[in-house]
Length: 456
Image (cartoon, rainbow, N blue to C red):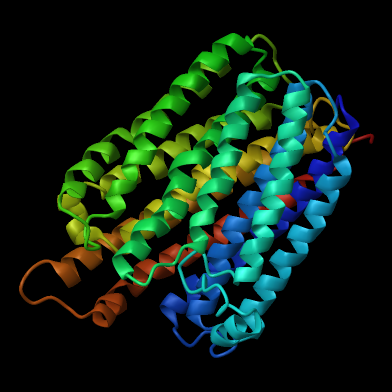
């Protein structure tokens, strides 16, 4: 580790992993409730468990991104963080607000939570993924502004690289598009239209810039490939991501009351969206093939290559599978959407966090060349357990979604929603088993941090 201020990333990474454990746990609760609806009712009803599950996902990714930025920006900028103190204070404020919000979901009825947090003064609650109380949203904005100020000043005062420029662009976009969370029009069509400006333009837009910057940083460190070569790939991938991702917002506008031209715009843009993810595969594997050094931290490179492949399968292939308008007419709102969501979030964003954590955490713990061979073997086992587990979950959801379409939406003698769900329960059971495998993989990953090498 070249700069002492990089150590502030450690708390962000640890807290992100703790939140990930909670997110997986609530996923298992939801998976069980799909099979037995009364599980943990009324203590944790389905709607509350789902709200906690999705909110933990969003918050842990934000913590991971912040940790990644605090680690890589000083090294890229060749100077200490502008304000390590601000980074530490921001962590504790954000962590406290996040924990308080999750406890609010679990301990207080949602309508009461809205009253307690004075949501009536500026109504923003009640929308999927954006259920946070208004006061929490304001806190997120303050945290984001202080974070961007810290990163921005570090970049401005130090060396400028393509990685830091792309990263800062993504972080600025993250902050700007979150402001649409405060805009809640009375018209339901307008509400859904602008709601996607947060959700879609985050996950299929600016977050991909952050992903690309982190991936480029790790590949440079573990392969030794010339920065100029990686920069060219990064520029191309980011350009295609922004063009297809921004216009691709249209595939969410098909049947919500918007004009018919969105059927064409959304379908055409969606056909292009998998390309940058495919290029990411070529990019990662080409860099690995052309590497000039044989870095001891081999598992970090494994995570990097795995990120590219899984992101392409989840965001690219499964996304394209049901985003053409004629197909989406039948598949919208089925478990096919959940299949796409699970694999794309895991492949693109959770795995990139594993990538940077697996590279940076050993260094911050005094292991400059990475963890020892034994620890990396445990981590490799955790890699495959989580990858196979998520592929199993996704496959089960694809089957469940396909069953929904044919049982509930196609034909003459279609079943009701609940009758259809009853038919799918065996598939949900398989999904739950793969969910347990994913949890076991995550626990193995945690264990890898404590593995001691022989003689040490």
